[in-house]
Length: 501
Image (cartoon, rainbow, N blue to C red):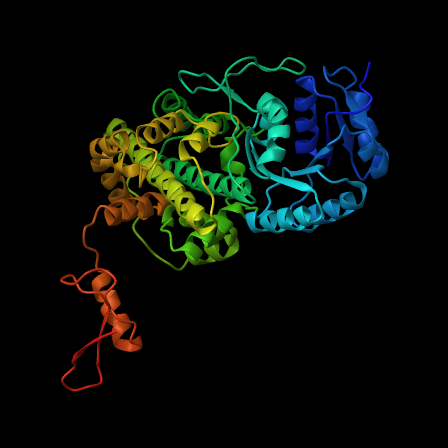
């Protein structure tokens, strides 16, 4: 028998909404669902009659709100931006003090801050929760990154912990095997309270920025193996499958192997060879890069991955340019096949370390900027399962922050330091070979430049600051004076005296 009132509600029955609703129902929670198109709601409920918790369809928003237990909890999964605001505005007159609205979309964290503040003034509570894992994750266990009203999350927490992906307590590896109506049991849930107001959506944004970097690095590895070794997609698929059994074990490496082995159903050619080389983007990588620039945090590898997508988008321009602009012709280095494959592996792993280091540096600065208290070890933990960047690698990050919760940079952790020391010769070799053979590796190269820059006790910024002082009187500090003491050369004056600023 269905309950008189549902435990939670969900608005928006696109693929993600449907899968998340079924995930919630699989864990024994009754969920009310509403979609602007009534027929879609009715079809969804009728096609899923036997979930453990039960689905309740509502034809009107009023009926939907009335079906919920108090305090009401409603998940919004509609298009980010104006559509989300419109749904929130329609709920406000129907809600009562203390009711909870949860935005599960890819919202810009500043929008989340704005919404939480506005709803708080109306006596309503708001949670902005990142949801990562795509369709499959939503159905059988995503990584969930909630931020906002802490007391409100305590009421949502039993549901969020139940539906989140689970990892093994000792190894951190994802627990698999969930089927409709039978979720996995045990394990550590991939969710935790992130922080106040927009913290959850901010961390989800950084996750997506790191995801951009991961994907581009994998693409550069593929391009190098194709350009320098002449390997077929199927051969590369086997290499990625092998990599997925070692340090690079991850969801993205796994699906890359599968993609490269896939035949095109229409032509029977290698599937990847018939896909047009133009990449789309939804904005989260851009947001990450813009925010890094706004806060003055070095995140060049993430930014390069965004720029690579932008460059891919001008396909016709690139085709025209290819007929005019000349560069070296890539040499086939088949005699070095085994060694070069290992070198590309090492370059990918080292670049990955730097990209993640940049993402965590960004979050480190954000907590100062927005007055959050972020637990980086816990963030790494909840990324071990469910999300797109889930990887064995994240267990190493979890362990790094367990060793030192105040770790300034992942590069300084003994494991990551040792790993790069061991592999950097190959990393440098790959970047050099790529340049010599005209193969673009923007994330590999920027990650290496970031590493070399971060390990440099002295950078040429001394000359840069002198230039700034020369043309704009921007002042400078001296190596022989305390930090925070500024000087200026009176450049137009013939004797060029030094003045204390």
